[in-house]
Image 1: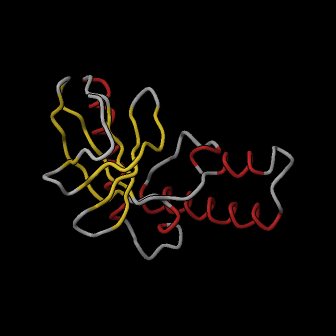
Image 2: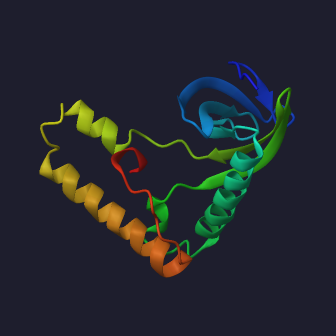
Length: 153
């Protein structure tokens, strides 16, 4: 399914604004939540069965993470799943996940500093937030993050 700017989803609740990124599994779009009048990140998964099954597993994990101990300090440092739904396109049914919009990832920050090192004040802050998030995932959600890399931080 080829998506386009201005396309709407879930009975006009979401409107695509611009493409944020893409990969083998899905495409992520900046979208406007027309009900709440704010921006969200919409991950539209490819319709093939394998991708759909993987997305359903991801949603199960994200549901646990989103609803687990919201008072743990690490909870605020883990991405929040806001909504999920399916979208019927010409090539099949797509799983769609809606997330809060985040800022630049660690890889972007590394590139911004031209791979010469990030200021120690940022390193300390990122390390503290990352360790707090991992503590939350492990202790409160029984989840082990198996894909830690700069583009996921």
